[in-house]
Length: 403
Image (tube, rainbow, N blue to C red; front, side):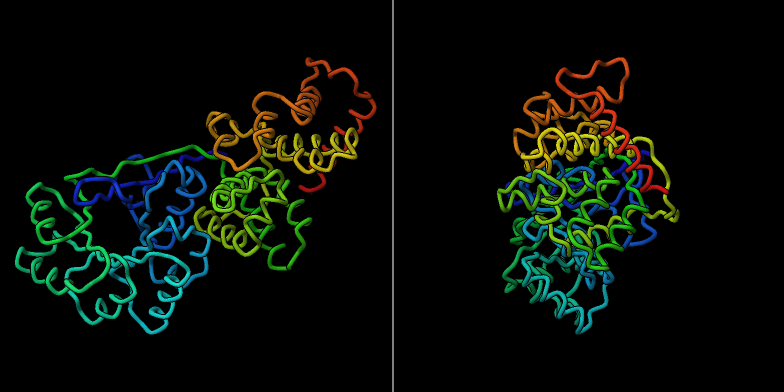
């Protein structure tokens, strides 16, 4: 049900050794080495771990993130899920330069992405074709003699972007590159990659495929919202992704449907496809997960309670399911609840409902918790028959969806 996710991160600094960016690296374990059998799978895993599991704020802060991108992903719309103001797409040296690729790079740059050429050792015909389209040239020091390095930097004298020396391992290399006019640096002299990790509930493959099916069939937002309510882990992923969009618009979200509208259907479709790629799972049959069922049931109980007790309060009805689900977020992601809630783009009143039991939704959450534990008395003022009906309807709803 749970797995540990790993992400490598190596600092990139300027000539004053001030941090300017990180390169994000694929890691499959705490061992600080890369074992990459599939470039596409590795990159999608890096994107998923950085932007969903760990969160862009924790991984990058206000710095840029360099991500290695293969030819396959460069040509794929999946890249549109990334925040272009935070990401540098690093073109691998294995990418074949073709007219369609050059057109695609121009399109990505027009969308606001920064592009970097990786492992440059000479300006051959392919590198020269890429040069007008990239913002950063990464020079591989290990593959160059001192004379070759000087010649390459001289050939790049008119390049208007940033030269970045990678694999800088000694102070002598750093001083030499700085004297040559190279602006950014990466290597063991500054810092070895570190490995970030987090434990996460595995996303439901069945839920992802169902969501993709609805998106492909142009289902309306209500249908999407109902489908997502049966996959609280996927809802949490969308909430985390919404934090990037919310930061740009300064608009918090208060319900699943608002998260759908904020992200947009096209971006949700691409994220769903990327998460399926990154999972590398072959079992796509529905599997019942008791924890996810509990989160969905609690959310549905909250929703039904809001409808029964506050029919005139649309804001309460729309936020109720999300509050029920978020009340289990610490168990879903195995992180402190306060930390996870603080990172989500939701109103302060909703955070207070989850963390402190405040406001109308906090009270309804206490009612929902009392229905799960016979030893906890129901709060006063609620009709026992209504509570029994709500609980029965919620359980029937969850069970019917898994049949």
